[in-house]
Image 1 (cartoon, rainbow, N blue to C red):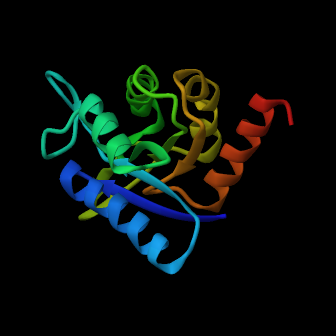
Image 2: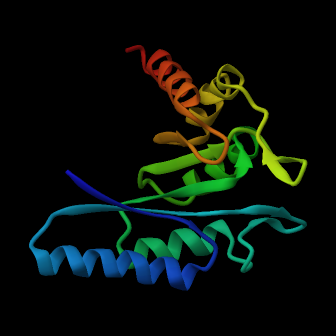
Length: 161
């Protein structure tokens, strides 16, 4: 299976263009692809929104119309902050949901962003994230091979396999 992942988007129009472009390119090449699309949200007084003001209901409607096979969020949040975002998506769609959290929220040290959440601490949130509706769980900024391995172990334990 071929997968195109459009990620870390903040503008819904651009995300939808990318999804439609991936579909068109695949069709022109005679390829079957699954298209995943994720936006990055931050907390606001009116709920989680992208930097361009896009909320989850707008995202679900737009990306579904554009033909995305998998929806979700990546970057900008630690795994704990992804819980309400995942729940908001799941309340609006039955499509598979991709969540790729950072290893916690960044802390600036010497002008560099440092991510302090360790692999096992991040992985302990997998059951809650699965209950919130995540179908695919990965990592973004600050995660490395040890984080992904810990997430995989937690997913396997959650699924009984």
